[in-house]
Structure formats: C-alpha cells, structure tokens
Image (cartoon, rainbow, N blue to C red):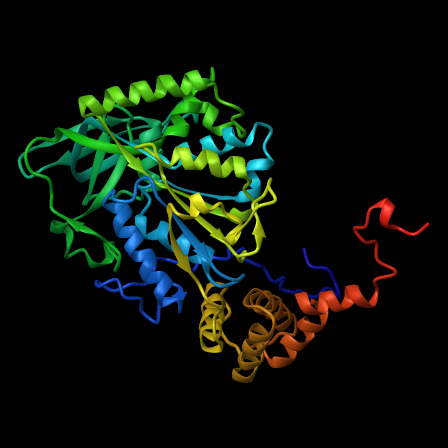
Length: 458
C-alpha cells in the first residue's frame, strides 16, 4: 500500500563483530618464525614465536604441571595471542576462557568455580565402534501424505562399486538431508544408531556435471565393498559436562539449563573412577586442554594456592594467564607485593611471554585488519593517518572504537569513504582516557567522589 508523500529510506544495519573475530592463528612459518602480518596478527614476533613453541609442547603433551603467563601493557595483544593459541590447537582440544574476577561472582565458592573451569578444560576422547551405511546417492524420493497430516517418509538408493540397495527414510533423516542439500551423486554416511547423516563429498564419477558443483566442492571416491560397515569413531567431551550429566536428574538435558550450581565431590570421584576404567580398557584417552585466565592479578592468594596444587595432577590442563600489572602489585588478599600481583612460587612454575606496545606501523596494519573485519571498504589516506596518530597518542582500543563510529557517521552522510572529518566529529563526541581524567579534574567539585563519610568535611 502506497502512502502519498511518503519517501523510502534505507535503514543501515550493523553486524556485530567481536574484538578478535579476525584472528585465525599465530601466523608462523614451518620454522615457527612469525610472519610480519599473517592470520590476523601483526607484530609481537617474539611473543608469537614463544606461543608457537608452547602450542607444539601442548600438542606433544610435554607441558603438564606448568603454566604460561602473558604479561604486557594494556592493548598490546595479550588476549589476541591467547585466542590465536586456541585457533592453532583446533576444536578438538578444550579451550576455556574466563576473567580473574569471575571466580568471585558465582553463587558457589571460588575453589568450586576454579574446579569447574579446570574440568571444562580437560577433554575425554571416547573411542566407539558404530555401524554406518556409506555410499553414493543414486536417488532419493520424499513422499508426503495427500491429506497434509502425518510425517513425511522417503526412500533412498545408495551404491558402492560392488552393490546397490534401497533404504527407508524417516522425517528427521529427510530434514537432515535437505539441510545438507544432498543430491544424487553425493557420497554420504548414515549412522544406523543415531540416524545422523554426514555429507562426505561429491563422487568423482560426477566431475563432468559442471553445473552441479562449485569451487568449494570436495571430490571423493565412490566407496567400495559392502554398504554397511563397522567403523571406529571418536568424539571429545570435557569432564565438567560428564559431571553435570551425572549430578542432575535430567541427565544430558542439564547441559542446556544454564547455571549448573555446585557439584558434589562424590560425583566427581565416581566420574574419575569411571574415566580411569575407560582408559584402562582403551575406550578413552585424556586430552589436556587450556584454561585461559585474563586479568590474572584479580585472583587472590587462595586461588593461587589451589592452582599450585592442581597443576601437579597428571590430568591438569595447561593454564595460561594474562595480566597488565607491573612489579609493585599487591597479591590480592595479602599485603605482599610481587611482580604482576602473582606469588613468586606460582611465577616459578610459569613460562613467561612478554608483549610490548605497538608502533605506528603496526597500529595502522591492525586498524586496517579491523576495518576489513567490520566490512569497512574505504578510508581516506589522510583519515587513516589521523586515526593512527590518535591510536599512538591514546590507545589502539580507542582508535578501533572511533573506526566503528566514524563508519556509521559516514553512512549517515551517504558517503562511501570515511574522511578525516568523520574521525574528528567522533573524537569530539567520545572522550579517551586522558581527556576523561581532565574532565574529572575540571568538574571535581560537582562530581560525586569515592570518599567515605569520614573523609567528607561536614
């Protein structure tokens, strides 16, 4: 319906992009030397090479009982390097990321919170034998009731190089095949126990069907032998998930109910006993993962003492901490001063990686990476130089925030390219830390301070 005098206006949409969504790895070559710019990381070559060695040690299982500390000033890439380590390790190795203050914000005590975080970081790779039906799809047909009631059913014809057979399909399997866009000529695998359908690729026999495949199509051989096969498969779960399943009446569904609460130590003991039995039988292996604790100086002396003991266990995860604190930092809960706010005996257990402030050239490359990640296509050269200067004088985080806001201002002005005036306008709207401090000094009498009642003159 048209409304007289109304005009159509396009409303800009904003896609949420996380701070480290552009990071894909450490950007190292075969000799573990850091490339200048690779896989979303820039600069920090020494720290990245050190992290690469740590990854190799983790993969070889040669770092049990030790931890890693990434120390450096704010906005020097500490969390980025930790995220890059997780990308290098792959999805099969558990990686848990928490902040040091989180252990004090749960309903249960901090040692229970630490225990849960550590068990989330310990994987159990379970080996199972399952029956599969694997072959090339000849055809599959879906039949729907004419009256519109009841579940849809179907049939699928699969073949190998030696035989061909027809199978019935249920509604769930039909939905799975439609979601994966399975077509004749695809090679698929069906788990008989669960009904899970896995698309393995496109048969080599269909390579001449140019219209049916794109550049990302994976070509595989048509399976040989019998359609029904027994295969060894493995899947990885973490110990905390097993704890939750065994501690709640609803079992597996408890994983989706949010907060799990405190878990009885007897449950963990029974889980550990069962895991030990599976390991002896060869049905499972322990996969030590990574627990990353950001802002590690927020932990107190009890947390450090607990981790000191936990790190000595044979199944302990690798603990990576990050902090921006210096040498004259009190250990939380004590009057003792220690480097980084971490006890000396804990520091003695750790491989320490340092990060340094970025220079202007690195800041420009990082800002360009963020622009690409946020879909910002064009920035005027003078505007980029101005933004780099801001990042050098204030912080790279502040420059990234101006990058996003200036992009929105440019779109509002119907301009494809961000100009220097957009950054100037946003800088006037949003203060950096130094100008915020100047504001507090200027309006100190009008602002409410953090003084106690005894400090205020009556």
